[in-house]
Length: 531
Image (cartoon, rainbow, N blue to C red; front, side, top):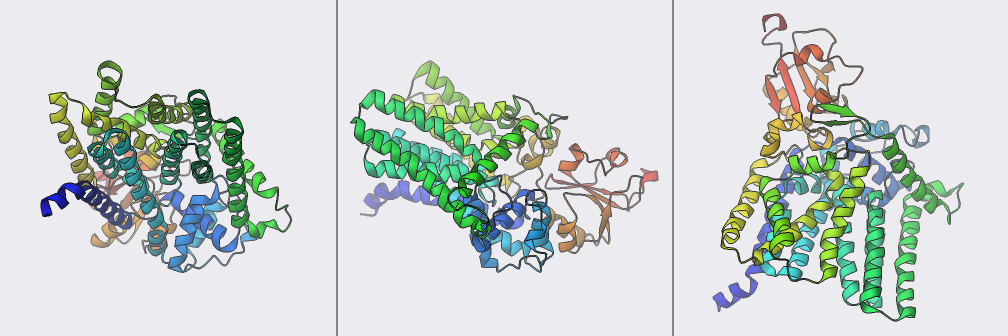
């Protein structure tokens, strides 16, 4: 009886263990990371959206995921800044407002961040299950477990799956919408049309890069019309649902998030105007470019090959190996036995997303193309059914290696780099920003300062507010050598700022490196003139 029970439910049991371990890795690594630079703005804006109906801040993002962060942040019972919101400029001052909210309003920063991150961890768990479900449906239960394991133990998924930002949200909703498109293609009922329209709504409200789902939906509908020839009036009616419900959802959520700003605006027009303004902001940002670091070089316009290199440096070696095997097997040896629409859904959306990202000029980090990874893992999972003996031996080894690599990388998932990049310590030679140092190490730096009884540091960090909050006495790095403790963020070591002149510091090797994100020079112990 017990054996029958185990045979029947072992898949569910293994999946449960995978999800539980991934949850624990995210939960405890999230507790160890301080609030990242962008999280401050997302959480603050979301809190104002939900509890004040004020949408003046962070309008370059749709409200859904910010609102989710703000909704849960309420559990920390934070205070708002005493400075009136009307005194802030909506765009330029959002960082000042975020710092006031987090550090100068008597709030418990760690408590706010803890609660705000929780819903995103659960979205990531949902992503793991969705990847399992899709791979299981196409290739069988064992393939589902392979895909789930790769997702649950991906350092990059875990890095951003536990942060209160927009990246894991758009990844989940993008994949979910493609899954719902598949269900609608297989059974074009009104109910499935409704579910698909909700998926489209959520992905458009998650992040503006979610608009890439629209050509996927359009081509999917053409595919459906050519292959299944549904009744014209029924088909047109369902397309109407796919169009009208997302419009209604966009209107409703923007109305909710900006209800305080409706006094001098039209309730009918304002939500769509806000959506267009946000989309234009991203388009303008893209055209102007973003200062980017790659392999020792800086550029405002980026490089077309930036994101392929990011994947090359940031994906684990087991992932890269398995992806190479799956591509070679698919095109050269044996295709998986699935229909052409399933091939379209697991291949075209990630390629389209990557292509659009490559022609853009906002080259910041792997988080901007996180959407690709779940599709990769589903695609890889079909190797389970390959009959090649060598592959059957290699596959479990590589999957096990993925798990081990992820556990060993704990808790420093943001700064994860593979051996091609020289490991975590070599990452600074290749990439920066949210690939490496996003201000996530301030609690670790506080611990270092306390353990070493350091009275004062000379810093070049994102800003000094977190240092003040954690009780660290500091001053800016002086332009001339000084015999004190100098601490510099990895981000600003490679992307120098005008008001800091750290050239004299960089002449010397650092004495300590905290989680590959904060570099420390102990000139107090070894004076400059003696080194």
